[in-house]
Image (cartoon, rainbow, N blue to C red; front, side):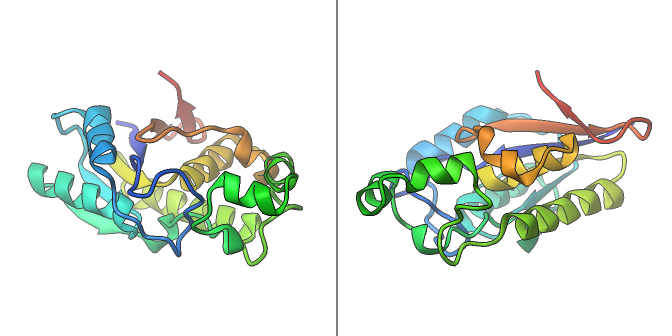
Length: 193
């Protein structure tokens, strides 16, 4: 039986769209709860839930694990990437201060990091290590990982062998569900349904 990891991005948090790394810990909005419930439905197909410690992920993960009586683990390595001085700001607020900042960031997120932001290679390294541990420790299991857009981007680039600079060319919607499979024959594979 292959190991299946399904990465679920949190739903819309309270406070709307803004850069939230790991220093902003807004809870899920009512809409966010609904998005996540709709994404996975009422059935349980997982052996375990692993979550980011941030409440926009953890609250749902805990509720789901309790409802289905399955184990829940928190992994600090699944926290969102730190956005430095952009934390808590909307794109519009950043554009007022620097009209080219957002475009530069999306085109070259390594060179144009926000001041005091977590370095992408370090972020990629911590997420890749978490992903590898999940695949090794939970071999032949089905794991639901509740995390953030950046974490899912880093997992995808890790599995596909893409450079960190390509990370923001992947759009991960609220409550998106991404599947990674490791069948023990091929390297871990991204499954698109």
